[in-house]
Image (cartoon, helix red, strand yellow):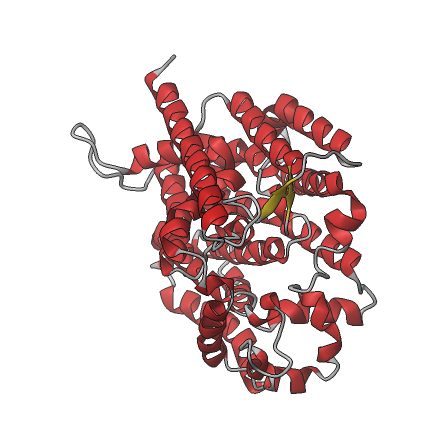
Length: 449
């Protein structure tokens, strides 16, 4: 076995030990102090071995992707590959969700007491609701919002209000929206990797983006939808800064603005966006003023619309911080979650991602016989991109505003980490590990989101 392969296994083994430690320590804390507020630490889940209608399809998809995914990714035409990745990712997410059955796996996920569909009727007058939005964030305010509505800007619940208005009401349609849109995040990552690094690396990443353990939580979780919007904002920015078409910058700005009004924490996507600008700096120098103008013009649309409607983003975020500590966030211990959150990340990204990130780090870190990379080659460029996503995730972790439930909250960052799988020399073995983890999680645990 080569030295690099051994180091990959060591990294994956260390990650497994981190998960084990989080589970053991977490169970002890929950049994003695009852402060974690999760059923199966470190995940928001409960132990419940089960199978369901989606089990045969999930097993078949896993086997087919492991057997044929790398070859198809290498040989399909680019546009056909993008369509295939989206369709395959959609099928994988749906199959895993349907292990719990249609009702539990999709139809009711967004209708629980914490979720957005609980507030549909309160948006009968949308402008008035937006003006009054911040008055219902605190838990001691009259008619306070459910946890997820209070914890997000109004573009999140408003999405489901608009779906309801066009005749796609109810948990089933809302769940399918999150699955179908969320699965496009994989396509957006491929577009970005091709633009900033190389098509070869993007093709190598494709099967890992499809067969992601994160799919367990992308089924009927609004965070999958948020991940896709953020991913397409970055993809359009990558197309703009690499000279494909400067006009994409306006679309990137528009989606960045929407991202900020879907989730407060996704302002950290700016870390990845800054890296995209750095990697495209040669083209940016040609027309920096045009790029900046298009970005800002696009970005201003959503904030301006919500501000004119009466919603104050900064005031809402200030109140959210208070609301966070009024609930479980004020009880959950930071000293546990600051590292246990990383164990959650291991579970949603899998051992292949851990090994891929190890190789990305090896490309970026200087050694006695190697200077710092100049980022003029594809592999260091991709390594920097996935490292930026990891940096954004670490900042979110250290903030203390993401204690637990990060298996869904951090999906917008996790989808970028998955691309590190392209660095691995034996993709089928690592894809098998990814699929095994996802199937085990979905069949042994009943996840909460």
